[in-house]
Image (cartoon, one colour):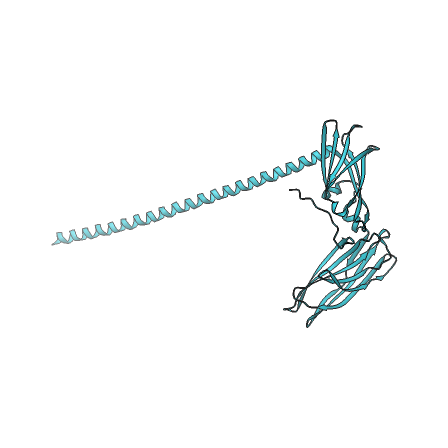
Length: 319
């Protein structure tokens, strides 16, 4: 009897140990699986990090290449041009033309060297005079471009360099197109303003508007403060003369509150050449549903020809 009990206890113990071993094996396998997943994820992160680093490295190479290309362009240009001056003069609003004068000093040239400048539809020869290649041409407004390509030829040797409007400040005595058009007037808006909505109307107020005219654009006309809608003036009033060339003024006018309508506030002045100068001080966007007007400060001068079209550079896309 005692022998049977001992044998029974032994079998129970063996069974318990077997269960413990099985559970331990299961736990070990689970831990190994987790470890494998962790290692796999870590490797993936390392690979992604490496890819990201490689991408950054490639981007750095791209930037380095671009910098090298830019430096190469500057070197080529510097190797060709010692100095260049480009001036715009005599804007004619009636004929819609402007005179452009060129003065080029190459790095190297001889009495046999020929030079020309190319832009838009124009190919203008330059003549050697007092150690400079000079020339002038009268062109329509729409042929004023932001890039001018200068070409030199000595025998069979040809050289060229392109000057961009954005780089004009690198050259002495250059007057750019915007300065020629707008440099003779100054305008500012330094007072209070408000937009008061009442029913289907909105009252626009603006104080502290100033306008200064230099002598070479003075025509005797009086600057006006205007409000326009869809390009048509719906309100205007003359500014008050504070002196021979300076004017000041303010406005208070009521306009219709129309859904999505846009009103523009500006000072209008027509110079002796017929060019129309506008200083935009505010833009008003109406929201009739919410009885609200969104007013945006502009502080922008634009110039228009007698055909009503804005005059500006024809910017050349480098790409």
